[in-house]
Length: 139
Image (tube, rainbow, N blue to C red; front, side):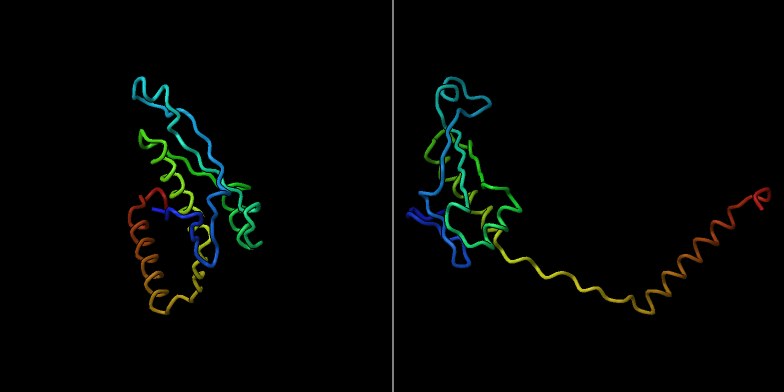
């Protein structure tokens, strides 16, 4: 869960200010009777990284992954306050995952001589099986 302060640490020296998050509220869908029909408990957190003053590399990485804005929603509980916390947590998780440094790419290696020999032996074995299955009229 995120801290109760004004900022949330995103890692790599970046912070998300709670004042930069725009909130939208609506009624939750699904069963729940009168409460769900009258209470705006569904929460959508919207954050614009470019307007938040993040470095260009971070804005570019987030834009390539999510578009111009990053959103997260929650309608898990009956409480709007709790759903706000959950939506903010989800927003922060999405941003942290997108800003994490990419894992190094796999370096291509050559197949070993033994693996080449095994592959060719299997091909010969499969070809022999197919040749044995042929009827006399096929030849």
